[in-house]
Amino acid sequence: MKAVILAAGEGKRLRPFTETMPKVMLPVANKPILEYVVESLKKAGIHDIVIVVGYKKEVIMEHFKDYKDVKIEYVTQDKQIGTAHALLQAKKHIKNDFIVVSGDNIIDHKSFINLIKDESKYSILIKTREQSMKYGAVALEKDTLKGISKKPDRKSKFISTGIYKLPSSIFKDIEKMGLEGIYDLTNIIQILIDRGVKIKSVNADLWMEFVYPWDLIHVNEFMTHFTPSSVSGIIEKGVTIKGSVSVGKNTTIYSGCYIIGPVAIGEGCEIGPNACIFPSTTIGNDSVIHPFSQIRNSVILDDTHIGSNSFISHSIIGRGCILGNNFSNMVGNAIKKIEEKFEELDNIGTMIGEHSIINDHVVVEPGVIIGRNCHIKSVKRIMENIPSECKVM
View (cartoon, rainbow, N blue to C red):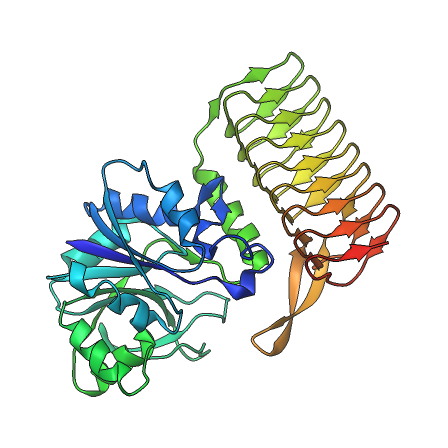
């Protein structure tokens, strides 16, 4: 059986982090989320994969150019006008039943196996709804899909993962409905249900998706618990390491550092001396954490420098950022606009786009998003979002 991974979109709601890379390549526990999807498919026995690319496709193709044990073919969606239109681009590569999955999911291989084993012609992977109300709802009659929507529904117990097992005949349906201007796969599935097509529901075990920048923090927090301990590089005397900690090659952890896992530190990094790294933190390759700084539950991307005596918590720092000494972000509640509504988020820090430079003694309020290539002068308190390519003098 083949799998089609939809990975053509930008992920506009994840800006500024998707301004230079597609959403599916954002790192979770120091690995692109798309790689988790490919690995789960491989573990489920699927070694023939078609990836639908589009926005910044070169980033995806470069990352997987030497990927082993899986045959990956690429097709391009030139205009991102809908998930069904994206799937249609893979038509010539699919002759039999197949799995379609979005490339921005965390999904375990057992869920894929359950979907493959189901004998129904059409199947959908669903998940029990928790507190989040940002995912589309499904209506069931026993284990048969009776309705599906892209909008949340508090009355529904289950949500759609957007992962299906489908027959190759679906492409004819997509082509016909495309003539009517229907390009979204969810809408097409609903039309098929209305026509009497039976679609079996299969429960997912592990499934996670991120839609907004702060979601990346929560997904990273969860996935770091699956990062195995592996200590390479140089660990000086006087370093305290507790729990599951991964340290990459050519990384130096200087004396006096205190690290409590789960933590993942990439290759070629310098940490400390006397820096503290607390649980659910990932630090990308070639990053530097200067002395007496403290990082908690955060995502630090590649090539980032964080000055001395800094405090970073529940935050994302984009690749290539330079933060001066005594930088700190506040953690607390923040009001954010989500799907035309304002919602209060708990325990949120800051999100800083790539290659931004922040000078000494800067404090950032909870929930503030600083764009890409920004420059903030010293001794500033940042209380509002800052668009990309801006300066704060």
